[in-house]
Image (tube, rainbow, N blue to C red; front, side, top):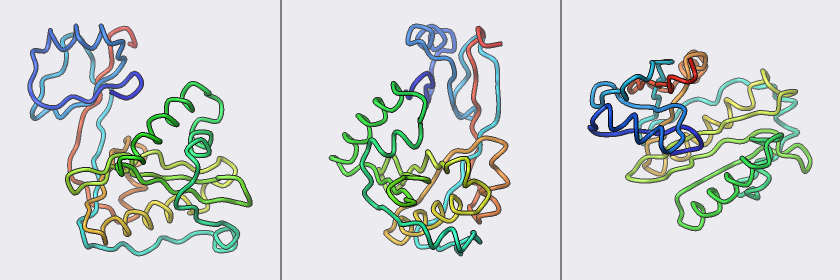
Length: 203
């Protein structure tokens, strides 16, 4: 579970699953429809695509605003709170949750996060927030709004994915429909599709 979203794997009774998710306060659930029936009464909201990069494969770095890129410094071990503030600048509760989660995962060697800094400020970040079983689950790629559209986010994502792949891991991540073209353009391979269902109260 992450926030108000649950990830479901395996088989469950749809009615019991609906009751459990409601008890937990979940508003949406992500599942593989090929292996798991959706909770009773919930409605299908969207299709999510899983992209990845095979271990050992290297993608070419995408084009970016080179003048801007030259002004940025890569921070491979940014402070957890810097990352949290970059991702949730207006939400202190989410900042605190991510800070706690990231610190715990880093201590256990289960997370890798990078930022690009412009001066002291983190203006772009991406991370692998779950490193396990030879896979690196990448998420939370975000660029400050004033610098979007200049290619720095895509380049940082590819750079991290290439490094993880070179270490023998398989970078994978889930993306919403509006981002499918972006990750396809970067060269990532489509691996699967999941569905996101929402609680009836959200209709």
